[in-house]
Image (cartoon, rainbow, N blue to C red):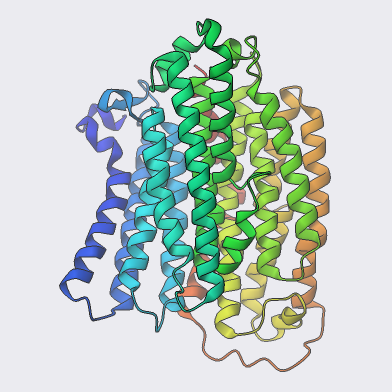
Length: 500
């Protein structure tokens, strides 16, 4: 039975509230004893808060909250709780839990640990709100709530010039992007007279002479989303930020932050700018995203193939994966199987959340061991850390889309959905790019398992938190194999509701 028939309506946002309350508890713990660092307690609070949000969101999703009986609207429709928002909250909370667990070792010896975990929780709260945003005003506020902590987290290593420089660049590019985004919102408001997504959808068809203004507004809003998802041509911040940031934060940004951008883009474009109304007016945003998808996946994969630094390779490959996920918007059409292709993109983002987070956390563990950052530095690493390297192998092959891993199933569903919608050429470009990605992902596996070590490794002690987080990500990636059918069906059902 749906939760809304048993509990007060406001409890539908309980997963988001749990994430926000966890941040406040961490602030409280720090204010009571600011001079003491208790890494176990702080990491424990952060992990428990994330797991609690994950459990509640999963419970609501399975119980049909916001699905059976329609979406739950709060604050005049500014917040919407439905299958899409709960699906993405599961993803955000999962990544936040793994990153918090991994940070237990990564932050050893660092000051301001409570602030670190609080910022992670605040960013996760903003991402969860992005998935629930029912108006363009809520979209902007939640986007900033997710972005501002992220800027600080990238620059968290204050004594590291690369981290500070990456944080500054990320902040400056993000500020420009926010300005473009909010100007686009103002143009849409000028043309439609509303910020509520459902009202914008009703008014944009009668924009009349203001259709040009509305069109420019839609393009500028798409630009804001392109920044958040690290899509070309707004991707150049990603390699710098991911390389300079603490490795757990690189995992957080490349998985959860990217998924948040897609969550809000799916809702805004599907609900506020219905294809049947705006495409005949000349606002062909699916074509815009089709061009972006092709360029993004191609540029990301070719750039990744030329890297010698493993972390930077993963950063560029995340740009390529943004191109795959963009198919969820690019392959939409009037009367097409839109729910199937968008739902497949959502399922791909969930699988990507586990395999990409795990890959970045493996790099964090390698950094902890002071092995090095290039492919050559990884030579023979499997002789000293076989289980961890086996997990990294699962991540690499899954990211490449090799069967039978989760990445293969999610890409297959995505490309099949595009073909069903008549966009076979998008699927073909995606498949070619996926084949190219096998080149650079397999370089990591070859270095770890086949190449002889160039020197002796002195790995020292095993970082328990990092190791556990990598194993959780690996198990999550493998568990998605038998569970992929229900996952993609849930995602497609949630996406279909947007087009009802």
